[in-house]
Each structure stands twice: as structure tokens, then as C-alpha cells.
Amino acid sequence: METKPFWSAAPIPSYAALDRDIVVDVLVIGAGITGVTTAFLLQSEGLDVALVEREEIACGDTGHTTAHLTYMTDTRLSDLVLSTSLQAAGIAWHAGKTAMDFISDTVESQQIDAALAKVPGYLAVHAEDAVEEELTCMKRERDWCGQLGLPVHLDEHDPIRRLPALCFPDQMKFHPGKYLAGLVKRASMIGARIHENTRVSEFGGDHVVANGHRIVYDRVVIATHVPLQGDSGGLGAALFQAKLALYSTYAIAARLSKRSAEEMIWSDTADPFHYVRIDRHEEGDIVILGGCDHKTGQKEAGIDPYRVLEDRLADWFPGAVRTHRWSGQVVDARRAPFHRADGRTSIHRYRLFGKWNDLRHRRGPHGSRCDPRPGEPVGGVPGPVAEDREIARKLSRRKCGLSGAIDHRSVPRFRRVCRLRGAGPRPCRAGCGGACRRVPG
Ligand SMILES: Cc1cc2nc3c(=O)[nH]c(=O)nc-3n(C[C@H](O)[C@H](O)[C@H](O)COP(=O)(O)OP(=O)(O)OC[C@H]3O[C@@H](n4cnc5c(N)ncnc54)[C@H](O)[C@@H]3O)c2cc1C
Image (cartoon, rainbow, N blue to C red):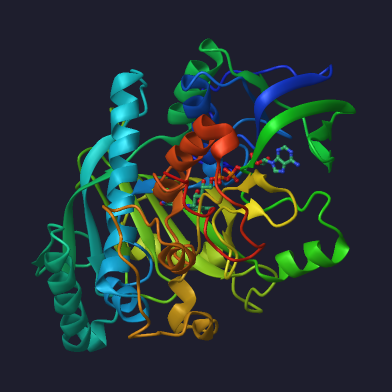
């Protein structure tokens, strides 16, 4: 069995390491889905962009994901509504939908072979002994979805365990390696300078140092998933790190007989939850099963997460033949915003998180970090974009994963900021949460 992700054989082109000083409009640090997408979009806008990656493209979380593209957040919709408002929860879910549409449009317009497929997404009851209770929650979720105008129905039997499940039609899945390979090629074709094996090690006021060379920039986007602190000082770095929590998650891939299962994405209500995707291939179906999350460094003694997953696999997919197994780390940015102008260097520096936040443990040991605040006033929101700083702050605590990585609250806003250049947003205080204040006009 391979101890690497199922996607690791994707034909991603290689790029030379940086070997000289350069000057660019925008420097993007980190070539996961966030960085590659940002570089592609900004270069398409006519900016001169450099994308640098310390190892290889997609070597981080993006290469280790299971790539469910869904607007369903790990946090139940009803919990989101309770902790924010229907309006704010709607922004989060609709933003996910917009992000999915973005990926789908990009695949089509850039003719990327990313194995993108529309599939049903299931959220299935986990506890066999509490079906009735869970069913009540499911019905509540269904009703909130109805209020947001998002299609969903209740199925009596989910395709894996034959337990009740919510079914969200038109969710998606794709091959993250192929998608990134296609996107990075397009970015390079239109002029983005791409450098692998180029680690940013120092921040100056208007430049970074990577491989011993200076990259002078007008703007920098830090798309490293685990944030870089740069020159903000030891205390700042420690405080920022304290706002992060890292979770380990595990996945296994296995071969099934041909056409033995429905193509889909699936997760359940267990805590930590399980997640499954089924792909159809000429040689046979593939199942990817993941879960067993725990706070990094806090694995329960005596528990082997792969063993737990293998037992589930054998139970749920008898006869499955394991081919790959791997693990990855998800960053929970807790109170840190998903991107923000740095407190000291104001609008010139941005941090983008692919996964804004992960509230899946809300009901678990870290529940206290998102106290529901019903009744807290939420300002007016034009369209699905959270222009309001308070909403942005709240939603920055929500996890959106791959879809969130290119959510329209990050890249297009940044594009707009870049376009405006001198007339950009006013700086916001470090940690205040919003990406930046409203763009004037
Ligand atoms: C097992 C697993 C399953 C998942 N399943 C899903 C899912 O089904 N759906 C979903 O939406 N999300 C999922 N996620 C989360 C999702 O994969 C991530 O949110 C997303 O890939 C993050 O993308 P990113 O570009 O922000 O970060 P990354 O892909 O981690 O990219 C950051 C890059 O920055 C580079 N870097 C770091 N420091 C430096 C430096 N100093 N200089 C230069 N480069 C640097 C790193 O090498 C890395 O390549 C899953 C994650 C895991 C681990």
C-alpha cells in the first residue's frame, strides 16, 4: 500500500528555483489552491505576479485533501444560524456555492481536465441508536436550507449505511492535482513567474528574501495555510500562533469492483465525522474514506487512526482493497481572520487561509470558542459578499476548505484593491478580523 495521497501521481509541471533578485507587483507565497488561484487571477488582471513555493506545487494540504467541493460546512447550518444569524449563515453557504461555480467555470473556460463531476452530497445519521433524535436535527437543517433557497431533501436510506440522510444535489468533486496542474500552467502561460524550491525566509518592509535573493513587491499575499509571521516580532508571532489550532486528519483509498457504488460525496454526524467519496474509473471504483481527526499532538493513546478507518472500510465496503493511506493537517484559525491586512504594514500584506476555520469541534472540547450570540446586531449586506466587517469577522471563524480558498470574499476583493492601488482600503488593526475596511466608493 502506498503511504502517500491518491493524487500524488498528477502530472504537475516543475518550475525552477529563484536564482536572482526580482521586482513584481504582487508576490504570492505558497502554491496550494489558494496561492495558485490568486496568482492566476491577479496575472489575468494584468498585474506582474510571482508565485513562490518552498517545495513543490500542491505539496501542502491541497495535495492531501479528499477534494469534496460542497457548500455544506462542517458546522451544522442550524448552529451557524444560532451563532450568527440566518443572513450571515446564508452568506457562508452561498459563498461556498459561488466558489464551487468559480471552480466549475474555470475548469470549463481554461479547459482543464480536472475530473470535475457533479454528484449528490449526503449528510448521514451516524448513531444507529439515536436515529429519531438525529432525524429531528436533520429536519431542522432541511428547513433552514429551504429558507436559504438551497435545494435539499431527506432520504430514508443513505447509500452506505442505509440510515436517514440529507441529500444535497449538485455538489462536486474533482482531482486536486490535475486541477492545480492545469491552473498553474495557465498562470505561467499568461506571464506569472513561478518558482518552486523557493522558501521565503525573511520579510523586509517592501521585500522578502527567498533563496538568498530579494523579491521586491508592491503587494504580498501569504497563501501558506499555516501563516508566516515574518517581521512582526516574537511576541506578535507567539500571539498569532496562539490563535491557531492544528488538527490531524487521516484518509485511506481503496479499490472496489466496477460500478459497485454510486458516485457521491458523503459525511456523517459522528464526532469526529467520517467523510467518503466514490469515484468511478475504467478499472474499477475508488473509495476514499477519511476521518479520525484529533488535535495535532493529542492522539488518543493506543488508538491507531488508520486501523479505525480500515475497520470502517471493511464494514461499510466489504471486499475493498486498500491502495493508499495518508494524513494531513488542517489549520483552525480560531480567532484569526481568514485574510487581513497586517497591523503594521497595513494594506500591503494579506494572509489567505484556504480553510478559514474549522468548527467541526464546536460541540467538542473547543466549543467555547464560538459562543452563540443571538441578537447581536448584524449590518446590511449587499448580495452574498460580507462587506460588513462584523459579519466578515464572524464568518472568518467558519471553515470553508477548498471552496473557501477561492471564495469571492478573498481574491476578487484583493483584485479590486489592487486595481484601486492608491485609493485602497484604510488599514485595519491586527486581529480585527475583516479583510480590510470597505474599499472607498
Ligand atoms: C485529509 C484532508 C482532507 C480534506 N478534505 C477537504 C475536502 O474534502 N474539502 C475541502 O474543501 N477541504 C478539504 N481539506 C482542506 C483543504 O485541503 C485545504 O483547506 C486547502 O487545500 C488549503 O489550501 P491552501 O492553498 O490554503 O494551503 P496548502 O495547500 O497547504 O498550500 C500552502 C503552500 O505554502 C507553502 N509554503 C509554506 N511556507 C512557505 C514559505 N515560507 N515559502 C514558500 N512557500 C511556503 C507550502 O509548502 C504549501 O505548498 C482537507 C484537508 C485534508 C488534510
